[in-house]
Image (cartoon, rainbow, N blue to C red):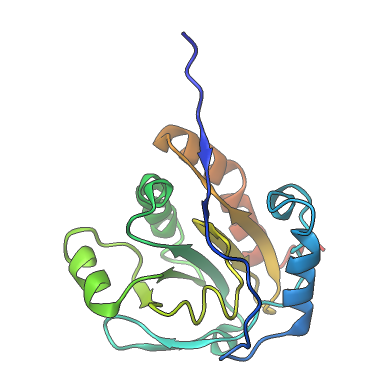
Length: 199
C-alpha cells in the first residue's frame, strides 16, 4: 500500500480587524487578493514575494525587545506556530537544524507562538526552539499584523525589509519537511543573504 504524505493546515478566521501594530496596506491588500480564490494560492503563485513585511515590536519570553524595522540589514526568518499544531511539531526539529546552519550569518530566526507567555515558557523548558521566541496570546502579530490563517507559516524577510519567501501549511513526515525546506527555504535564505531578490 502506498504511503501518502498529507498536508495539513490549521485554519483560523481570516478576519481583517483594526491593526494594533504598524503595518503596510500593501501587505494586507496583497495577501487578501492572493487568497481570494484559494488560500493555497499564497504558496503556489509567489504573490507575496517583494512585498514589504509589516513592522512589529514585541518582547521575547526571555525579555528581549525585538522590532522588525531595527533588523534591516539582516535576513529575518519569521515562523508562526502554536503548541497544539501537529505539523508545527513535525517541522520544529528541521527548522531548528536550519537555524543552526545559519548561526554564523546575518540571519535572525524568530518564532512567534499563539500562546500565553507562561505556557510557552513551560513548553520551551523541555523543547527549545529558536533563540528568539515570542508569545502572541491575543494574535496581535499573527492575526492583526500578518493575517496568518494557516500554521505553520514561515516568512523570509530580506535585508531591505521585503518578503522573499512565504509558505503556509505543514506536512506529517519529518523527512518530507526536511526535503522541502532544504529545497525552498534554505535557498531563499541564501539568496536574501546575497541580496538576490526574487522580485
